[in-house]
Length: 237
Image (tube, rainbow, N blue to C red):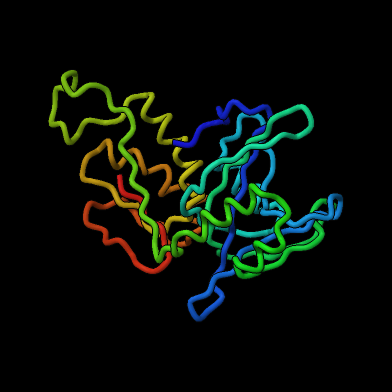
């Protein structure tokens, strides 16, 4: 599960390599220009107090380029010096699903470009490294996120049928936390095993307004729901 910054760096930031389908088997990635520094970078920014890296990455991408995204895979983290402080930036690959760019005082331009030309424009080694990691693999047609059920106490302490063993208080807190994180993947289906604890783990996610607004098709939990194909995200618990 994504956690608040524990990278050991003084400044924590997060961002993404945001891509869109350009047709004929091509993809384009988003790069931004900052007028203050006259540089080209990938969208990213600092974590807010108590914010996780994943949530910060999605928020910063939305703020800087106006993009609604489906997070796909983690690309890694890199660090560098900013004056006397050290800074870390965690990156994810993100599929652009909508939205449009509006210039701001911080970011005055945004371009969609092929990864090759993007390398020639980007100003910093860390951005180039993350773009190269993105380009190492083809973009996926779909994403499956596997989630282990949250805490449900000890089996030995449950007197009834184990399939009916529910989440404990810690487990319910974990499920609510998942409901803040998992919509970052823009799920189109949520699937659970036929165990009460499994259903309870993903139920807050399936019922969350963030999940419904991102995908529009979050399904009720069922042990027999099919996994859809075609650049979608499904969860299985």
